[in-house]
Amino acid sequence: MAGKQARYGATNQNLIQHGLAPTMRWLIAAALDGATMTYGEVKHRLETETGFSTVFATRIGLVAGELMDHIQAVEPDAPLINVLVVNQKDRMPSKGAGSYMATRFRNPKLASTSYKQRYPASWREHFERAAAEVYAYSPAEWLALYERVFGSGLNDIVIEAERDRRHNGKEDDYGTGSHKYGAGGEGDHHRALRLWVTANPAEVRRGFAVARTETEFRLDSGDRIDAVYHLENRTVVLEVKSRISNEVDLRRGVYQCIKYRAVKQAMDVREEVPVEAFLVTEAKLSGEIAALLRLHDIRHFLAPLVRP
Image (cartoon, rainbow, N blue to C red; front, side, top):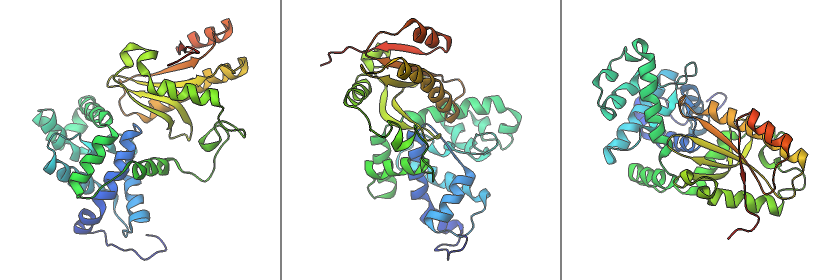
């Protein structure tokens, strides 16, 4: 810890005793955001938030591996959350994750220390499969697993705080964070539509019925998406515009969809899992807005004005 007295020396014993629980909390937050953490990010947070002296980045592999060992000791079939600790350069885990993927996917070759370098495409394929399993785990499942691993409870408030902390900067640009809705705040019609879309994915598309849904989803850009549907084979971002929206609002909504889709795709390590965007309105679209949606491959859903 630069400028402060460290609470813990960065020994293997201390990293295992004091570093695993906070690392799992950070990784759960990243998993629920459909994101990753670099080795450098874990190192920085261990030093600045947990109180470790300088942790060499090469030691973070130990932390990730020991964490997964502790998890598998209580739940052998748990998702491989350790794969979310990735290299900054290629956004993939290092060779140490290979033994875990080898067991999970019954491919002993993955455990070879040279497999990632020799077969990068196969390594990415297996990594993305592992990440998909991690992303599919629900908040409730993560909370229960954390309690089994560490013997102490973890609640929604703590995890939401961790998710917020992932996005906290020193500057809150207009249109992001708490200022998304401008000085007047969110209107009643917009809020009602946003919550309805979040609670009723099957109304938007029947195939979305099994989605895990979230509202006001925070992107790493600082933006908040009105609703997100998490599915095994795709992610859907939805921007809603209520019955009082005018043409300017709707045009802005199209470009918000473009931005949110691009940022969410960049956050997701799974290259072959698409991110789709929907503009949800309570009024029919003009020809100009409809053409703009087609041009940028954005779907439209017309929500009923009268809803149960």
